[in-house]
Image (cartoon, rainbow, N blue to C red; front, side, top):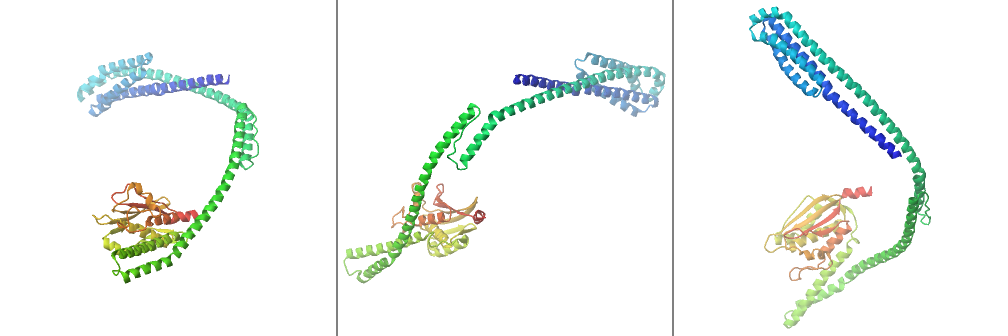
Length: 494
């Protein structure tokens, strides 16, 4: 029933709007413009009469200008009136009467006087002035009658517009009242049947959300809300079971994390102690094998010399490996003083350290202006030294080594890149190069222990950044790593 009433009232409102638009359009597009054009037509005819009369009395050609302009305005106004009147027979009849009388006046008086010279016009005009006035008065009466009829039509259209507006406003008032009444009834029904049960359900859900997971949820109201409450209650029970399970899992995870942390700490201590304690016996082995090589080299057979050389080489490699392992274990443990570090100064010191190998290889190293970051200067120096020494060491034999250090801002981080034109890294090994003791070449081809990039990864991650190989760079290798910007760190602290 309510929908039917609303549909009827809506249809009435639509009709009232359409009727108002139609009347307004008819008034604006037809009646008012037609009345304006009728006044323009009368003005054009008056201008013609004024011009002809002035020319006839004075013989001045300048008086013919209002006449010629009036003729043009008459044609324009007549054409426009004929378009606006359309199917209005009375209006067209009025227009035809005006045109007929105007044509009579023009043919009988205006055109003949305009066609003669000034002297003849002055002579002829006084004799025909009375007759011309009588004919033009008839033209005036015809235009006045035309304007009266058009004004009457315009007033009727305005009255029709007012009545349709009143009907439209009344329809909207009734529609608004019915809508308000329906809204009030619907609101009361919703409050009793939906809002109150939902409020109670929400209160129970908030109690559960606040930590009272054992609080049951009871449903009231319509069947749909009772079903919803039952579903929420089932979800509460499932969450309670999952929570109990997750608590147990978290307890086990905390125990495992503590055990793993203890194991990692012990492993780091073991690596440090083992590598540190091996230094002295290894130095003795290395010293005595070198002494044996110097004292007895060439005095024994060739095989003995070869064995001694193997022993010396093995001792030296073991010493380098232990030193690298010791440095790796110290990252994040020994050097842990975070201060503002000017990376440009650190890079310059690194270039001085590597000056001999850079000069021997003829490497060309350029870099962008480097920022200041928060970190440990010793570890960041190790980072630069490993990256640049790798670029120099793994150079291509057929071209001059060119190394470029670039930096860009990426959100809260600085993104650094060390790019070279060396031998590059195969795609299958670009992730493995950061693994400890991972080597891609033999020691005879390229010396080293395979710990350099693993050291870089540990330093970068200790400073809160990431490091990877740019797979799209060619030829050569491009290592990209990030470090948090100083201003981002300050914002986090504040």
